[in-house]
Structure formats: C-alpha cells, structure tokens
Image (cartoon, rainbow, N blue to C red; front, side, top):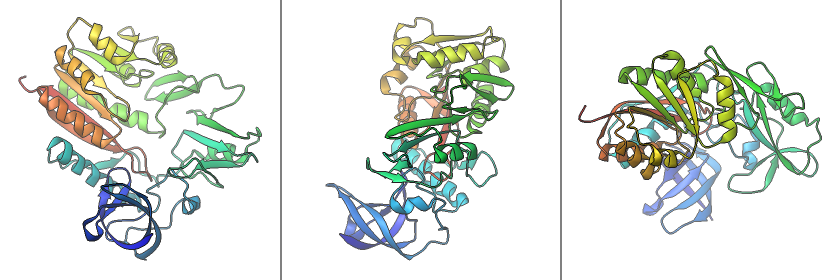
Length: 379
C-alpha cells in the first residue's frame, strides 16, 4: 500500500514520524518537513513502517545520497541523504527527546563533531559479505538478502579497495576487515597484531578484538572521559566493560597515584590490554562478567567508569554499583534511550547528573555516543 505522508520529526533509530489520520508511521529515507510518497512495508498494532518511493516536496537539507547502492536498500548509511551539519541537529533532537521522555530531564546538550571532515572513509573496521560469485555485498535493510556494491564510502580507502578487489577470492562468506594506525590490514597472513595509537600509547590488538570503528573515536572518547574524571577528583577507579583498557590505560597514565582496575569478560581483549599496558604498575585487569565481579567484590568503590553494550547497563549492575558505595560515575553510552533510562535509574539510586556531552563518532548514520558523569547527591 502506498500513501502520501507529511513528515513531522525525527525519531530514535534513524526513522522519521508521520501521523496520517492520527496513526503513527515510521518512515525511512526522508526528512522533517518533507512530503513523500511512501510504501508501507510492515504493520503493527500501534504503528506502521514505510519506505520512501518518491520525494514530492524535498527538505532544504536533502542532498544526493553518498552511497548509490542505498537506492537498492543497502543498509548501514541511513543518514547519507542528509547534510552533515543537519544530521547532528537531528541527533541532538533525538538526544534531548530521549532524556525528556525516559529521564524527565530537560537538556540543552548538543551532539558535536569530533573532527572537521566530510565524514567519509573514517571506518577502520568493516564487514563485507561475498556472494557465490565472489561479489562484495552488504545486507539489505531488515533482510538477509545481499546487495552487490561498488563502493564503501565510510570505509578507510585502503580497506575499501581491498574489500572490493577481493584478490583473496572469497565466496559465500562474511569477512571482517580492519586497518591500524600504520596501514597494516587484516585479514592478512602476515598481520598478527593491529597497532592502534591513542595519544602516546600503542595498543597491540588481535584482529578480532573490539576497537572503535571511527579512527578518531578512541582519542575523542578518552579525552572526554578524562576531562569528566578530572572534575570528579577520583581516588581509585574501576573501569567496567573495560575492553582492552582504552580508558583504564589513559586514566592510569594520567594519574600514576590512582589505582585503576579494568573489568572485562572477553579473555582476548584482556590479554591484549595487558600486553599493551605493561608499563603501568597502577593498572590491573580482571577477567570477569561485570555483574559477577560486583557481586563478589567486598571493598567499597570510589569512582566507576562504565561503557556497557548498546542495550545499556542493566538495573542489577547499577544497583550493585550503588550498593558498593560508588561516589562518582562516568558512563559512556552508544544509545541515547539506554543512556536516558540508566540516568533515570541512577537518579533513583541517589546520584545526580554532573555533566553530559555527546559525540558524533558515526557520521552519516543515526548513531552517536553520549558521555555522562554523576556524583552521589549527598556529597
């Protein structure tokens, strides 16, 4: 079914809202203020989903999509049809609405850029599917169907060339590619480690170990976390969901008198983290599930840094942090709704929000990162 829709606003998840006759329709590939001809692709009891078939009245912020394959439904660059500066305005609206809806917090925080570029070719990690003919493909949105591609505009240019050329002859498989600070790439027989430099620290990582996709994201996030910690004046720090110790190593290096513990479940990440921070005597690693670590910990906490999965830190984790008497918290979130829900939970546990910032580390997509700091309200 097709219908004409007037687009009202952006919503969480990179979709836009229309309300024909009071019904809620989430529309992909459009902009606020546009009038479009859209096709309903999914129908639920409380809402419908639609995709744009024709733009009848375009927004002044619309531009030609940076990825021609998006016209065939290729997923992963859902804001590629929007001026870059306006993308951040839309993300700011999503952030502020999420905070109001889920935390009853009115905020003037804005999503800011982390570098002054066109937002292309920033990804140092990509996944490419190869079909039975060896053609590089990506998945269609909400589908397992593969769409052949001739460009990968967000991928580092060396990775893009490598993936599209397919000299290795991949077929019927998904391949992860990564590149490090020095231009070494994986997969490659001779690449045992990827060397990523953040500030003055060299991280030697196994190719499969998690690392932020945007080449400038690790430095930008680390700077933000350190700035918020400096204002909190921590005595000791526990870094939960610590990964390879990106934050833990930065904190330990900046404050040699502070004891820092990084807690991470992934054994390979911990191994990589230990290897990359051998010089830091005040940094230790715990290989553990975060909730299990908190439940068995007997010593009170002073300051906690946590960077949980996209779904956020569950209520049990936050309750345990409060039970252990943490006075200060720095929280890194990759989803604004999860951030707002956990902010609301921490407020109910006796914490007050000190500072909030948001970073656009995923240009041309709806994603962004939020960094929040908290103190016990009675301090």
